[in-house]
Amino acid sequence: MDAANRYLKQVYLPNHNAEFALAASEVGGVFVTSIGMRLPNILCSQFERTVGNDYFVSFKDHKLQIPASNARSHYVSVTRSELK
Image (tube, rainbow, N blue to C red):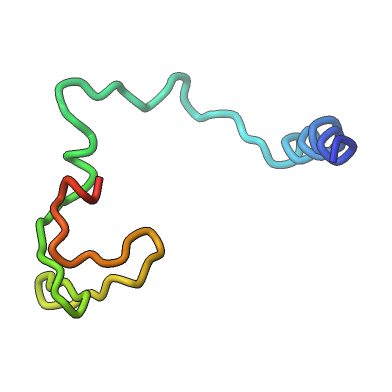
């Protein structure tokens, strides 16, 4: 493992970068700090649903079945605080 990691660092990566690396077309970064917004609220949608006795949840025009899990014996009548 050590010899393989040494080879990657000393031989493979320098050769690969010499052949394929390109200089950036512009100087500087394009990412800016997010100020005044919570990314979890932007990058996801949360919907409260009820799990039926058949382990199905309805969402829009779909019925989704929750797969069996060793983590819980069931999900029926589970409150949101119990899932956290």
